[in-house]
Image: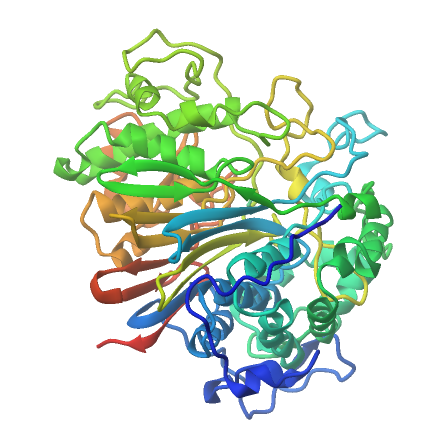
Length: 635
Ligand code: GLU
């Protein structure tokens, strides 16, 4: 059963008083939004898209301004989107804590980034709780339905696997039971001060009034238009007047209503009630329009699958790195083990005394080794025995480092290590090489911090940009395609093979770094399996290479996931390509055929310094730039 132990425990940190306007709001009332002046809709003639009856007029509005860096005290928010960061900041300003702000920001991202996140998906929530001084996590990963078969991704007509994109992605069979609503509920219940209704109210208002379409949203809609046209519900919401123009306003009253009802009725409405029944029906019988040829294999999700869902309390992963404690997400995500193992390998070397290309060579080789282990050993621990302890052990890392030649790149793929026996001495190589799996390129990350010292790093996703492409009719949100994170073709030895009820392996890596027991840095990123290398590279830039946090985030990126080529941004190739090729690395530019976008990741981070000084950092340019905000800005 979907269950959450209700508690009446007081706030995690600080008994909080909300503004009278917030307290006074009734169920579903739009008065629940703490309104500040800049929240007002621009007074201009503008085109309106989304679920509405009037055709578009003249495009006009500018998207809200955004800044990638904010330094201040009293609380901070970093996300990819200015409306979402603003909503998180307003919650903090009104007395909410970092957990409240994280849920409110995430709900707002469900409005403005509906192709990356929302209640149709899942994610991982990592919290530093200032009251206990401990890091805790929620695993809100989607699960496979109980009736999912090992050959679910094989086309019965041809006997061959479905093409990953767009065929398998655009399907009911790839939809996992959503974990995001349960994650929000669990987070608020354990550590928050707001009810779900209050936490969702600002996002409901945003969905109602709409947001100004930017180039990223326009492009993502255009790139997925064929998939959205495949379903009547999706075409109706997302393409009603064609692809929305930049500067037009996109409204989603269906989602506003869904958020309000969810807030009022609680998440049982989704896991045990009518909304769940609608989700199950949509997965089993996607509302195909006939407008495209996509095969849309249906899924088997039932109401019982939804009722069985649980957001899990997980112990975080923890490793020590150069005097810091680095906490991450344990399996079912591979984020914590793979970031942690890579750092443990890198700790064998004094990166800070190396030339930049030498340090980067070590970074690329360390991640190849850790990715070999990720592929060989990591899956949902409820189904497979994951050697988490070994993967995070310093002796194991010392042995893995025996395979790292400081002067030359190893041929890829490299083999996984032997987790059953290790003592820090160099062994002969063992095991078969395993290559990487399918991972999407969507997702979003947010980081929040409050005046009491609580910090949240939260990564959430619906998998691919646009998820399964299926909007639940009249509900305003898209269902995920997270189950494509399973290995497509069943192999009994693969820890990430399809199994009923299982969580597919993730790469999401929300990370919190402590020093002397206090948080100093929290971060995360989207980007499929490049999430792991992006988080690692920012950590290395910051902790080893002496970069400020804004520089560490902005620096050009490269990713080596145990494949023949290093995928790198053009600026990285310009700066280090020749020097790294001298080590034997082959670099291909991100965005070239066979790779994904030309940019790698979209980090949202907060650094915390002396006397509560917070540096919120988002991307300056990737994905159009993100939005960092602080309560009491300094300088
Ligand atoms: N589904 C991916 C994961 O869980 C994330 C998708 C993405 O970031 O593109 O690792």
